[in-house]
Image (cartoon, rainbow, N blue to C red):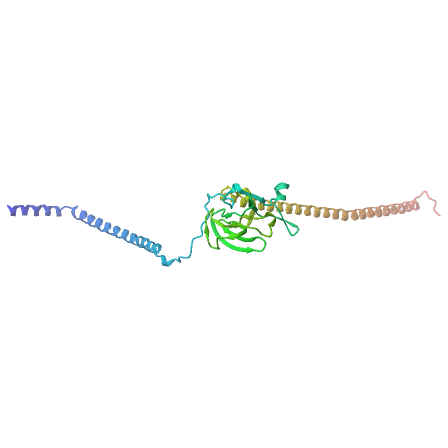
Length: 315
């Protein structure tokens, strides 16, 4: 029985081998397997470098020795921050000297003048004092980095903060300074205490505060309690004003060139008319000379006719 079963199974395989489709099917199956292996291997090659790069990035991020510990990133002011007065209690603060604005009324312009050595100077910031005249803590109006701390002979101790996006704040007339260059401060952090200086001695104890955008002083009162992004409108207005002045200059230049061309054309026409007048006079003279010549010829002809006339008695 076993031999019969073996013989039957061999006959089945032999019959399968004899089929026409067997070997093509076998070849296709082997080719598909090989192709799958090749594609899988290529995908593995592409994924290995990515994994290696990720590992390198992780190693670099954790390698604290590769970056100096002393270097700190300069903070950029939060665009949602609002510009605050550089005092702890705004209700007790008083602006004793305003920012000089050419578009302000006469009273505000007078309050923006500072008398020093018998001369008046236009204030490029605001002087802030307390209602009771006592010293008070001066705070950062915005988050930023202390760019410079210096002592000015006229303005007293000065602290300059940089806030990114070309925004700067200046704090002068300080009695004591509690920060140094390179410090990172947050809005409301103390910078020092108010004091006195020679330039604004009439205001007593105060702080002189300036707000600048791209190096240009702006009126701090217009931007107190306003988002710092509002300072971008200052740049746009200056750009439009510059473009307007350029267009005005171009218009004036074109008008001047047109006026010059008109004057040149007028002078040329006058010169042509002047040149035409002598020519006309010469033509008139020539015509008169021709008429006189014709008259003479006519008289001579008449005389000859009289001599030749048969009615005349010949001698």
